Image (cartoon, rainbow, N blue to C red):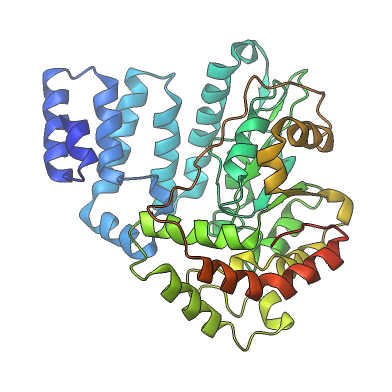
Length: 374
């Protein structure tokens, strides 16, 4: 009942049900864990500042921390409680205290998937930077590629796909970020990485990543900007943040960008002035910024349409880029495909196609790659 009520966002009623569950069975670790999840509503350190302030004032984060601590006492092998406890502490601006819990979560998550690792020495005093980062772009197949990479037997994925360290949580510090990844493990060669698709466009992410992890390999998926823009719009609609029609939203952003120059498109002037439906599809300016720091050989540029049409070939290309041996996946499902209640009109697609044409031409010239987007 608590789970059903939570699904309807009837939080207080859900809390009551989980409290009753714990009263009836004080040793049921799952009751404490889920109650902590209800208090935090979502991954805690992802809260917007004003939501975070509200939760701190109500004391619910402290209750969540207590719940996760009890859950860990009752079931020390459950990685999720360690992870959420780390998130709650991060939300309370205690990132250093969160690190040991993230490390425990990383260890227990990994050995659940690869039991042989339990017999090896994990050297938490030797943390690692990610070997690769999928830096973009959103709505271009990044989740699918990330999950394909994670299936390789020599890959140990981080605690979660989108860590957002170089965009939103850089103030938590590099040790905090590294605790999301498996450290050096006795006698093991493995690859690990981050996949946060907002990095490519985020104005400071390139410099931050270069300063912290200069040798990390970077993977970029680029999708036909017309399709990506439309998919991005409907994604925001599904999240209930966008009330305008597609046509209204597109023409409003075209008006915002009407005076943009290459310099202002590169320096972040227009970032966050809107939902960035178009801005996030102007790939060339972000890539110029990133490639002014990182050498070209550290980039793997993938056309999203190739990933969809020839998944096995693109995945093998990616494994080779990461110096991983060949490995054949059993299947290549498409994760989180966009679904539209109605198809965009031909007029708006034509408007977008004409808008992106000169920018796409610059991209092809800059990379020396023909994308053949229409």
